Length: 351
Image 1 (cartoon, rainbow, N blue to C red):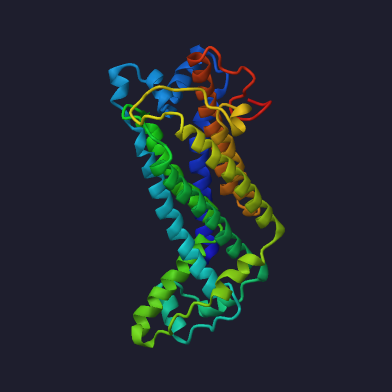
Image 2 (cartoon, rainbow, N blue to C red):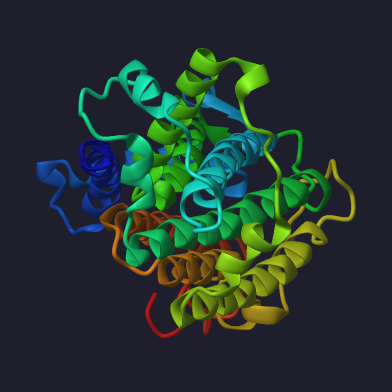
């Protein structure tokens, strides 16, 4: 039953990521100007521009009309926190209730409830969920683990946007970049949860239907046992902990790089820029982007690498941040005559 929903959700997410990736790849390819290559590259540069790079891309007033304040970055992480928290709570509740063996099964009301959620099968949904193989239970708990990492990421970015970065009042970003950011912070947690989200949603629908049939007075009390809530996470495989270690490593460097960037302008209203130095800035122009690649690589490894949408998510992160890093690197080279020529844009010895 849940396989139908899973098969529908995952291809949609893959198609959405492909639609987001293809324009970036096309703009990066050496397409002849006669075939529209130059126009495509200019459009994507304008769409992805923000802050210092937006000033060069939106020199005309007509282009400036399609921009929003760069401080709207805060909206990305608010949306990310809401989406990730909702998915995390839903799947964690499902995992706690049905993916641990110590929870009593629902009573005979399950047959009535199954009809209310659209199931016409003669067997009980309760027996269906309780019969899930051990590998599937680990898959669900693994999804909880990865969503916890994503929750840490978006909460930290929300804090940094509000308290670390000091956006200039004149800093802008293109409306297309703004809409892309909103899309990303909805699609990213959905992709991480896509393998078991349909069955978790179906289980919640089942619980709501059972509540309607029984009423509050006849529903069992929900007692949360912290042991059952956390122990399955501690029993996950090595790939989850290796992924978590990589995630933490990337996060620590991103925190440091963001602190360096946030301290460059002593006066919040100033538009003056200086060359950032320290941490991974000694090797690349956008080490905060490089750290982001490391962070999402950790999530990919922690997810087990078996879900196609997560691979497309990571491919989008690579292409999007690489394109933005190249534009930022070029801006640094044009802005500062003494800018270190030994630095790469985002990945040392690669680009």
